[in-house]
Length: 267
Image (cartoon, rainbow, N blue to C red; front, side):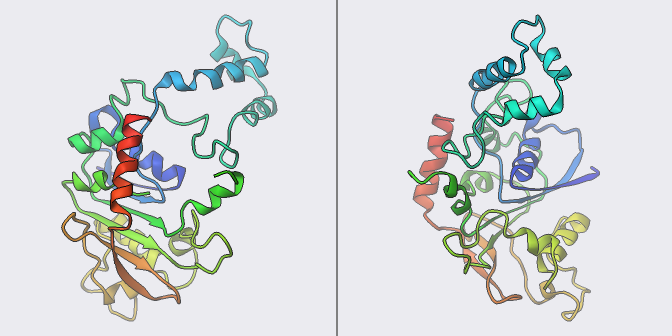
């Protein structure tokens, strides 16, 4: 196993989905997975994307071609982007129900990823998965009319750590919105997130190695426990930095469970 995969937002979704393809058989490619603001989710059937493909073909003038896919491959980039921009995007009314996303093909993805997780059909490698405290606020900006799935960790048979990012809550209306945690893992400051990511990439454990002095890494002063259903603890980043704490991962558990069930029943 040679790859420790990392991703944020759509990248995190991709990391999670790569763990369930081919019935979870990745031929030993992945040794660990680090997901920020995203995890495996319910996919709709590939037929749900057909109307968007047909719209793309029509907009680009490929309708009359015998091989429309080959025609699309020859379309100038600017024309293709103009066509794609006419389909539902991230900040319009349909929001996260994107036109262009992974689909169930019953080959690469044999079933909905959430069911694969529940059945144990995934590449069972150590994982870290976390979210920002106000993940959805930024997406509401495009929709004036109007998180992690417990099943994922419930059936995990390998070490999993979870975190919650609650810093920068003072941002008006948005709070700790989607992607604000990136500065913790790739910015400057206390380097707690960066240390955790490096530790996990090297040791498949975000905690500081026992020989690291307390004045070198803030992580040396704490023990970040693995997630388990009996005591689901999330390492919590709070203001002011470098303050840390732990939060029980039970927020709106009943509602989260219902959303998970509904996403499987009506993907």
